[in-house]
Length: 447
Image (cartoon, rainbow, N blue to C red):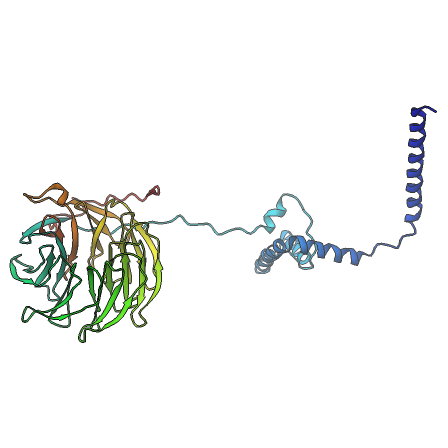
């Protein structure tokens, strides 16, 4: 037999076998038990819940809401259909597709989203330079205003603390005692004391009735850069290049706490009566919030990319701002929740100050001063400090600034060895200096 004949006979046999099997199943189909509708329905419900359980629950909720709405108004034929479909869905059965209207009857319609509204900034009068005070022989590094608002003190690289009359700008007294640059000053509101710190690792307490040092606070291992006083209890805080902040008992000179955790110089330190009582900013790019009673860190804010050189607390709102070359950031106390960025001051920001009217000022290492509206972050003025005759252009740097207690005068200490006092321009109005407010979405800058 040839191969073709063998193949043909095999194909014929297979076909006949399939046909016999098919006929056999057809003849036996009538002998099968009848289909149980209840069992089939249960099987469908189980399958549908297994595959579409999450979707079905959302659909059932939407339909239940529609059913309640339908019961509260006169029934229409359309409402009757919805009620029937809701009843079917509650039994767990898959709903039949009834045409294009079916998806709209089961879809969950989200609430319309409102466009974000940017609040309009408050108008602030522009500030202008009204007085330049000379007298120091080195960079003027710090400033503090007396609580009665009659005089202010400055410390400089000439190792001298000078006290000036705020109204006239005349020198009242010079205090010598530090053997290196004076970096921080604080005047107590509760005692006739002036506190100073410097690069000689010294923290001193001066009695202003005798103009003499009455206490030394020993403990820092390196230069001390910043001081702060607690507003309600007799506690002094200092921080510096050794990466620690120290809490001192003002009376006994005891080192109550040593706040460790920063890995680099602590450049800025502020203290307040409410939680968190201590906030520190460091060259390790972090901000730490501290519990004064426990002497422990509550949380660490790591949003900044570069060193944090200045922190300032708003006098009335429970918020604070931190300055770094990448951005000025605002935070909410006590948990340190981020509020907003104030972008644009592209310099090393050494210092900041804020007054009760919500004017935030930031001073840069290149002599630039930016004035912001605290609430909206709107930059309403930019100033460049004029370098004084006899100084180099490179000495245009602002090291410290503060508002007086009325908030109407701004005192800055600078690298050209001068102290400058600014005040608001009385002749300005909203017509002469309008708000250039453009609430468009700004492109995110990459630093």
